[in-house]
Image 1: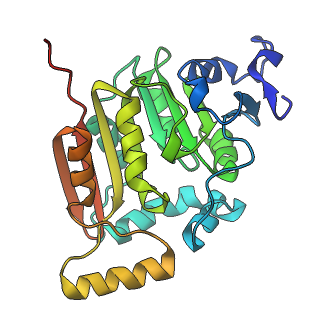
Image 2 (image 1 turned 90 degrees about the vertical axis):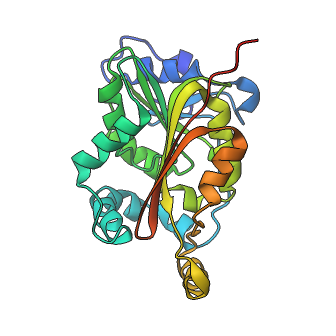
Image 3 (image 1 turned 180 degrees about the horizontal axis):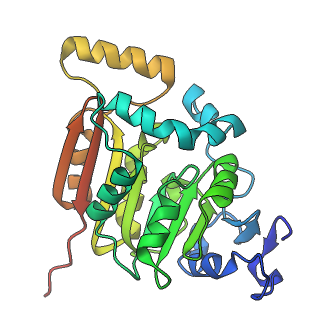
Length: 272
């Protein structure tokens, strides 16, 4: 396939085709929210073009390197265990627990925001089955290239996009996840607002992110960690408060060391 070609440039019977899932993902888009017309690039859909959000700090720059994209899949379980003081589950249990929190079912559409190399996106695709769709969104081309290479599937599509300005139409997803990435997004609360917008009423959201220690000494440690790593350390009420302001209900927060997992539901509209 040729880089930068439009979806219409490819035959549906291409033996190496990833287009069925890409075409279904394209149908979820709002053209007015895309920075460019959707183009297939190296197996993923590009609606962002050459101007991804600026990388602010060491952490974001590292995430966009080929080296980090290559080692992320191996290093993530170790990092989670360290962040949660060795309480994190193994990979399979981690995936199963996240899928349960999202309420994934066959035929569902799930958006994995800041998906990295697709560790969860590809597995979500197996859970939603042939009638469902798992779409991973990331601003890093190197991460997306790794995702396409390692975690593709017939119900999986990847998209080069901005978490702060998601290119999807309103209320297209049954579930939305953002796992171990929100702390690197420039405007994380804006991103949460976008997740609310694209989620259907009744849909579930799961966010796994950082949790800064409390107290005066804890705040000093947070300042040091943020300066050294460019990773934002959220306060105990930051994520839950933002979700509540958006309108989410059934908010549940699980804390483990310097990590937190927050789950919530977008309520159905009240009938008049």
